Amino acid sequence: MKKHLQTEVISMTTNVNVPLARELLKNPNFPRTCKYDPEWLVSLDLGCPTFWLLERLCEKMNLESGMRVLDLGCGKAGGAIFLAKEFDVEVWAVDSMVSQSENWERVKVFNLESRIFPLRADARELPFPKDFFDAIICVNSLFFFATDDIYLKHHLIPRVKVGGQIGSVVPGFYEEFEKAPSGDIPDHLKKYWASCMLYTWHSAKWWERHWLKTEQVEVEVVDNFPNNEGYQTYLEWERIIGYPEKIAEDDKGRNITFSRLVVKRSK
Image 1 (tube, rainbow, N blue to C red):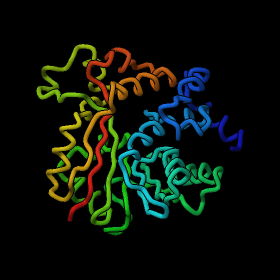
Image 2 (tube, rainbow, N blue to C red):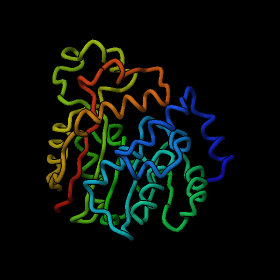
Image 3 (cartoon, rainbow, N blue to C red):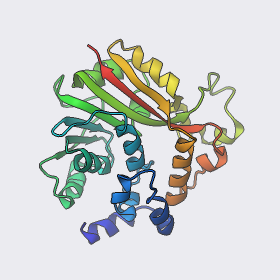
Image 4 (cartoon, helix red, strand yellow):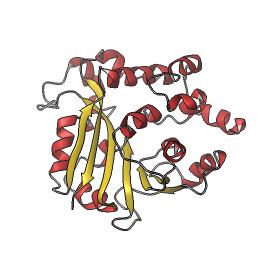
């Protein structure tokens, strides 16, 4: 990797605990992630440990060499690099906030110009034909734009081939807060509810129902990271990056997790 690029990007992230990153990001429970430089991984931060989440998601997906994959909400294209290197797939890396030129520079560092195609685009205006992708991956992104009853059915699902998988990982809760925002939100989460958009977080069961309402998919996987790993993942990333908001620390594993869903387009 070009050292100047790595240093330049890290400098934009404040309060990063680099020694802790070097320790925690060599977690043997995530052997694929261990191949990558911890300092580079934290330089990609846009709110989540992308590689850990992808590694858990890809355990449940059928990715094969040469597939066309959409990485929607790709951030700084780290996940696209992971997918191309680990699974030899072609990746269209789409994000509405990060420019394609910036992500192209990251792609070139890894000599993946023939396999990763960055694009800045809105999730509701995807410039791809129907049935174009073999698989779609959304890590830490769907809760921003896919919680209404229109998006999945009309904007996302048609872009994958019939029989193709769509995999997602989202932060959420073990159980839905049915009376939010007026009641049943734990006191330790109330202060983050609006400022950190926790109102967009849901349970795995909520997401399962949300996908099934489209009548276009079969749900293959719906679960939370096992053994409290979702909470621990969030907590460790919170400590590494040094966020001023201590959502996971305050939660102490009572409510917060990461939910994993894999669906297959059926029609």
